[in-house]
Length: 399
Ligand code: PMT
Image (tube, rainbow, N blue to C red; front, side):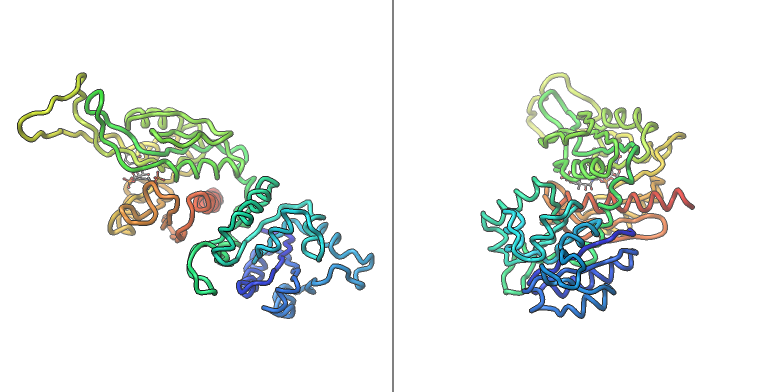
């Protein structure tokens, strides 16, 4: 990553996790400087961060040792990026209201570089209206939040408020620093379900909401890519800066994707395309019979496999695998059988994740490896997947 990162540690039990963050960031060739609030010093000693970062830790607003006694300005100027981890409700409130009564809040006001916040607090404090308003306010000012995560908390309660694990914060920062890596890259993404009509009023479809594919489109756009989204019928707003082509059936989606594939560098098939469609379409409403009825289905064309087998195909082709059992076996089979560069596999039909949920987890496979992207909201997951795609695409182009 090769960045100058300023890590600000606030007072919270999660402060100990930030020590690991320093180690991980240095492993990414980052130079790290640490600022600690007075409450943070009650949880972890400054010496820990000094030893791990290899730099003195700043704790005071007015530092007589700085030649112009303006440590906060110097640190703000020095940093390429600031991450506050853990960030308490108190520091979020101070940032939101422009208070500047200690080193960190003053430094924040003086900073012009990107600022990231990894909150950690009790779930009730996180859910409090005023905290959410402060977060909203900071978001509109361009501050990016990483987490918090859901789970059991040190206070014994369960809910949102756990600080994101150090490795995931590092991954998120890495992804942001690569944001411009997709500049001038064209990405084609399919999303949502398809509808296979039986007659003018009935169709066969599935539970896909389009959330995963739309989140991928937004993440790719954020990374600087030119994104074309081929969308089945969903009720999501079209993300800004994205060209969206609406289709209904698997055949229409096939045509929309294949006719554009050659002009794209990456294809991501996140749509839940029907594998079968009714063999015949009745032009009038099918009437109820006295006895049971049978629908004859015919196989649809496999869009993903067809994209991958084009003579002029996108340089990197990513498929999904939605499985209720034997996830790894089926995902690896799809990777080989459809001749793609990556398969992002998810469990479906479970209580959490997969179809129509706001959250998901992915087990990602490529020919020489795999990686787990753990359960999180689809927007964050999409950024992690796009980051992984960028990494593996770069590897592919250099081998
Ligand atoms: O839309 P959400 O509610 O957010 O849910 C997200 C999701 C579960 C739909 C998504 O994460 C996902 O798994 N999408 C792929 C669903 C699917 O159809 O999986 P599959 O295992 O049946 O298909 C494997 C791959 O082949 C997929 O990339 C699919 O797009 C592609 N395919 C399948 C059939 C076909 N005729 N053409 C295809 O291109």
